[in-house]
Length: 337
Image (cartoon, rainbow, N blue to C red; front, side):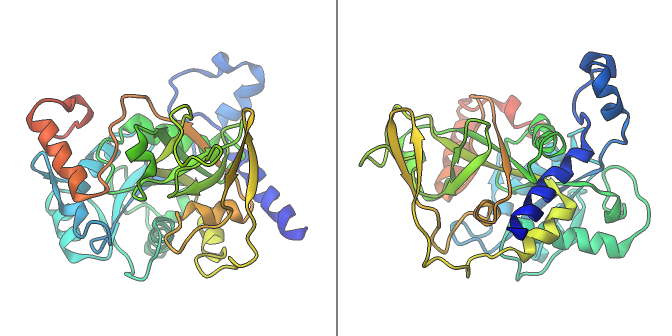
C-alpha cells in the first residue's frame, strides 16, 4: 500500500511542471485558470540519443548509411531542430560512433557499456552532466544537468522522427500525470504486427499504456492477428522527468519475479482479450515502468510516418525506396543538407 501511495505521488508530482512547450498560443487562448500555469518557468528539456554498436539484431546500426549518411546523424540533426530542446547529445559506449558524431559536429557523452536499456543510458548522461556542472547554451552538452526537468530519449534508428514528434512527447510528460510519455504508430500489416522486432502497445480509453509486448497484442479469440484490430506499434521515442530516471534504475527489471505472473484480462469491444502480464528476457524496457505501477501516456503519430530501421532488410528497403523516389524525402530532412 505504501509503495502504491509513493507511485501516485510520483505520478501527480509532474503536474507541477505544467506549461506548453511547443504551442505558440498565448495565455488568453487557454482561459484565466491557465495563465498561472503558462507563467511558470518553461521546463528545461534535454535530448538524448542512445547509440549502441553491439546490437543483437543489427550490429553497427547507428553507423549504417541511409541516403549516404549515418543513421545516428539523421536522428541527431532532426532532434536539434526541436524548439523544445535546450540541449541534445548522443550517448554511446563506442569510440567509432563517438568519432562519427563529433566529426559531423555533434555532441557526445560516453557511457558505460553495462547499460542495458535506453533509460539507463539517459540516467548516466544526466549524472555525468550533473558532475560536469557549469552553465551552457542551446545545442551543447555544457549545461548543468540539474537544470533539466525532462529528458527526451530518441532511438538512434528512428531517422524519420521529426522535431514536432519530440515536442509532442515532451508535452505528454509536462502536461499529464504520467511519469513517461511515448509515441505509437498504426500497425502496417500482419508481418509488421507479428514481428518480434516491433514493440506493440495496448492502451486504455485514456491513452495510458497497459502493456508493451513483442507479441501481437491485443489478441482476440485464438487468432494471433486480427485485421479488424487497430494495432499500435511503439515509435522509438520517449520522455520522462529527470527525477524519475533515478526511480527507474531501482525498479525490478529482467531478474524480477516472473513465476507468480498471471494473465491480465481486458475487454476489447465484445471480445475478451488475453495478454501476458510478464515478458520474456527480451522484454521492452517500458514493461519495468508499467509493472511497477507507474503511468505511461501514449500519443499516435500521423498515418504517413515512416517506420524506423530495425533490421538490415529495413535499411535496404528504405535505401531502395529513396533511390526510386518512393519515400518522400521531405520526411528525411538531411538528405539535401
